[in-house]
Length: 177
Image 1 (tube, rainbow, N blue to C red):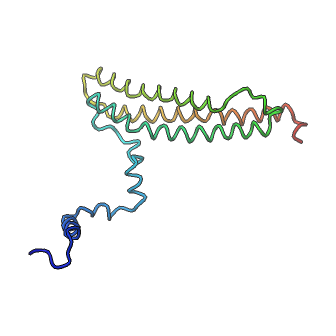
Image 2 (image 1 turned 180 degrees about the vertical axis):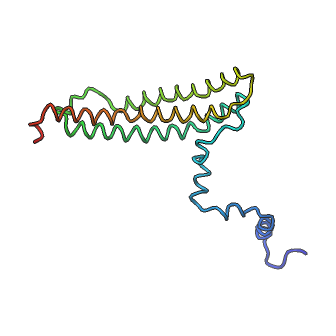
Image 3 (image 1 turned 120 degrees about the vertical axis):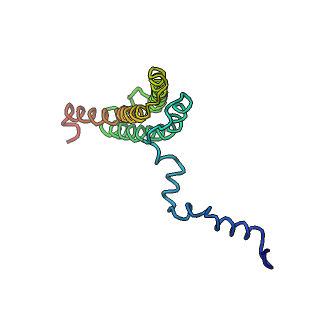
């Protein structure tokens, strides 16, 4: 049976695709879940099921690097904003801080990425030491521990700002009353 009058090639392709179920999975998912799935956030803490080669270990870690950096960037910026807000409010001479805040973010980001690289290096060394038997749980474990440690380090300026503010308030009680 051929195409009827007024039927375009695009209509035929669309009808064929619908008959084969090509769009069923897209239609069944709502937009937020498609966005999350497309960015890789859903797989962030997934186990590396193919941890039996150096290449697969490397790609498992590198697939998560951007997410790791986004998390640290957001936490780091929030931490520095808290620090500088408190510093400007309560420091006796806020102009005499002697520090460029952007430098700390750049240095921390560089160090965090060097340490992140150690994750796949250590996991690869474990693969070599285990006679190339895949150890899928080590990557996820190292990733979670490293992420938590890095987030805590990124929070240090904000935490230091709170403690410095409390110390300044205690030392200069008459200044703020």
